[in-house]
Image (cartoon, rainbow, N blue to C red; front, side, top):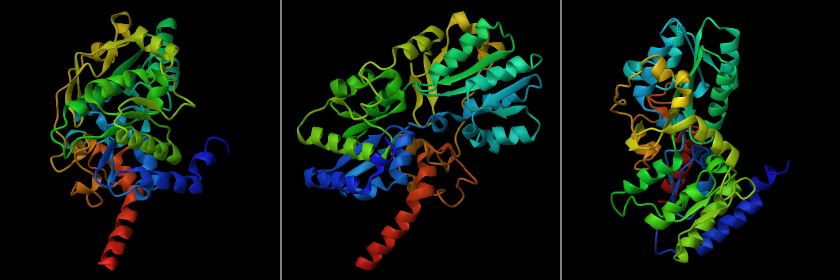
Length: 381
């Protein structure tokens, strides 16, 4: 199969790993953040970290849209779905994200709320057309990747004069979160040396929006595809930039990403949305101009205005380390709940719920390698 098997070839992977090992400077450490949850999943699933030298560390970032949605917004969605007039449409990953007092959308549905899982915004539109007596609300989340489809659905709803369709908007922006991460670096021990740039997001916004990382923070960015060889080649490109004293935005994912991105998708976003002054991210707190809301021309489809939603901030489970993990300050195994009270069957935090969450990825793939590595180290000592 073209464009899949070629990027999972084990012999090619060994070759790239050998190049990385040959080119890293043994006298220094390299800390790279993979910003996208898809990359986190690929790194765990294919054991990419095991093929890297010990002085090259991958740091998981806040690139999972389900993971970064704060508790207060999940609480809002549950309250909204509890309105007997409302049918709340959402993606499956959100159903089990813990809210306040142990609640979740899944538990709210079991208690009688009309919450339906959908695959796309068009599914929600079809429900609104088929059931005009219901108030159909689409719980919209995601980065720049999923924002254009939401914009198109709102435009279609307006064109069809659908009066029972609205959107609870939680779309957030990747470059702004990247800036928040870099601005929050506290010391040399936690500072990043470079970033593996997101893939899907970059197909929409292009490479240009990351230039501030190189120009203002002096760190390289390499936009990477999702396959294991994509990620390994991107790591090699980062190593080379650092060794050469360069910092630039480079594009490894040339088969899908251009410098300026998808102009049509960007226009759809600009038509329908405008910047929010501030928005809370799980792990990052309130981040200025990091999220979108519906523009005034589409205010009739804004669920927050239609239902008078006023978000109240709510705290995470104090024992859960999802916030620190999303900032790259801790690893999943640093959380005392990981693999004990918290598992994919009984998630205590959002990072264990989503398939792109770093805790879920490490639970599925990395924990077995941890045990194997520990046994080998004990045997060698």
